[in-house]
Amino acid sequence: MNHSFDYIIVGSGTAGSILANRLTQDKLHTACVIEAGIPDTSMYIRIPAGFVKTLYDPSFLWSYETEPSDSINGRSINLPQGKLVGGSSSINGLVYSRGQPEDFDDWAQMGNVGWAYKDILPYFKRTEKRIGPADENVRGRNGELPITNPDWKSKLCESYIQGAMDHGIPRNQDFNGVVHDGVGYFQRYIYKGKRVSCADAFLHPAIKRGGVQLQVNARVQKILFEETRAVGVRYLQDGVIHDVMANKEVIICAGTLNSPQILQHSGIGDSTDLQALGIPVTHHLPGVGKNLRDHFTVRLVARAKNAASINELSRGWRLGIEISKWLLGLPSILALSPSMVHVCWKSKPELTRGDIQVLFTPASYKSGKNYELDDFPGMSCGVRQQRPNSSGTLRLRSANVNDKPIIQPNYLTDEVDQQVMVAGIKIARELMASASLAPHFHSELVPGSHCMSDEALLDFARTRGSTSYHLVGTCKMGTTNDSMAVVDSQLRVYGIQNLRVVDASVMPQVPSANTLAATTMVAEKAADMIKGKLHYS
Image 1 (cartoon, helix red, strand yellow):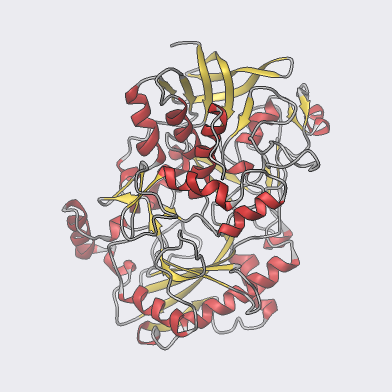
Image 2 (tube, rainbow, N blue to C red):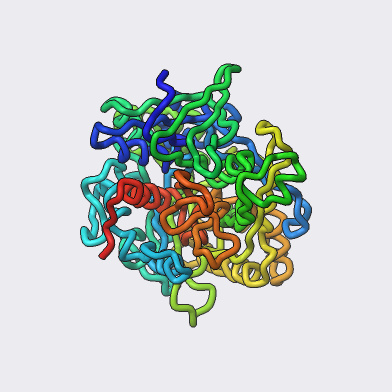
């Protein structure tokens, strides 16, 4: 292989795939993409419903978990992250949701110049190929990532939507438009019944075009420096150490849990922590691994009646019919995301923007099992706070890159988060009890009718809640006045030359949405910044 490239990109996930494509588009520049995981060849990646397999199969994953915490009743929570070409875009729940325009205005108000909604909207538009009705002032038609509406519909979903509208929540035909509040269907990166990962959309075409070399099963050991200038990356592949050098920049796109680890193993982080582990300090940057944020979700479960749920359709002869439909390109449960209907609404009427999400799916899963469907007709609602205040940390357990880090998200430690979660559960219950859904609602199973007081509902959330896989913030973007900032508004690591972080870890707050869409925007904007082009108004 070559040992020198213009750009070294660590991670082939959402951001890494986009950067590899954009930075070599002129056919004059080269990039080496270093991926710790396996190639993206499994059939389970292509089948959207295959997430039930990939999301907990260690051959596809970094199998991280949190430390136990009193705030979630002494539990630890699994935090799987994609460890394969395409990263989490190859194994996740396929939802494309940008978030509220105000989310990005908030980033700009923190001092991050150029990150207001008006500034980043062109980058959202550039990556997507919206298929279906859209306001083309805010949606893109010519990008590489196809964004579609679900073509499979359920009586349960339609009744739930009508019930929410009866509750005073307006119908929203496009959560990726200007208005984010309302009830409606999620959009997905599924095309002709198959998942389209960011590797499919961006990386593989770039490799085919030329100028991009992909190394798989390659575990980064550390960034290489000349004083405080990043010059390359050292990685281990098939038992052999390799050094690859960057003519221009090293770009870390390893994700919210891996990017800070790579920085820390390279001597960039809190000097006290690094010295305690015997890691030579390259640059004291205490914010590395801090500001860890995530959406914490708790799910209500009900028994359904008088309509087929996915639980029944996934068994026996009915499953055979669904497989046949999928093979013929017809609407099928095999081409669904795990949640179908989205409610974005307010925990208090006086709020100016939604602060809770309720996610409805015409299916239910066995308690304590990984996406194993119940044996009875079921439906469920997930509840989450859109902009949690609770934040946590990630730090190294040892100087050995193979040791899992110490992760503590501090879920539900903030009092406002607790209040919003309880309010969200109450709203979810009201929507499940709507007159429109009543013909299909048999009974609430989880948490059950015994769980009524605010204290009981909060304890239910502490006992049953889990990650939404929307981890952000551990390499926070911020100004020089922010002691926890890791990168500047150009995503350059403070105190280091020729080194950037480009992934969800730079987001100062979690968007009011799933994080893939925002990560595509961050990567697209970063490509322009790296190439010296900006599209500000």
